[in-house]
Image (cartoon, rainbow, N blue to C red; front, side):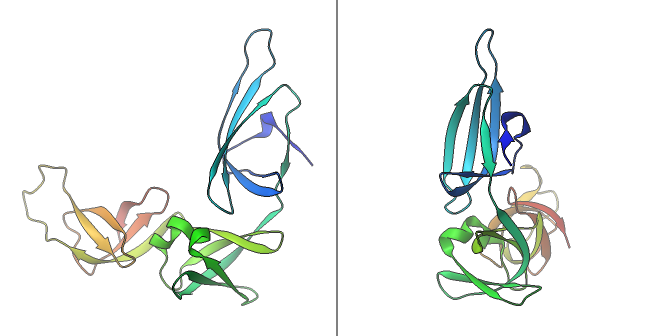
Length: 187
């Protein structure tokens, strides 16, 4: 099976040079009396590095990457390794800090994630869209203190710092969007 330039979409996984990549963005340009040029930005699923490629012509054919996603639960961190357990087989998979990347800012014990496998090897994780985290430290908000839009900094249980509304206090649990690291609501 091959994927043509017209079938590209964000998040699609492609195999290039024997490595799995996800399509981050793409653009197809067609000028008069010339072959179309397709520019694609890929992100490596193994390393997170970004790769830009241009393809010319009508016969752009890409091979889909044979990846598999399995539901897993985050167990613990022992320094540089993060340990996850498949919720169906109870098999454990350690991933290094490089493979987990910035997702570690949203991981607390028992968080359910999607483990991404490439050729039966766990290579990275996909976070849920929203996670619930406890506020460990924030300054008190005062009535009438809204000249700057009504927000204040807060430190969450994972060490992540975000902006929260003035009514959020230490000990509250907040929902955070993992795509952009922004406050969604108080839980």
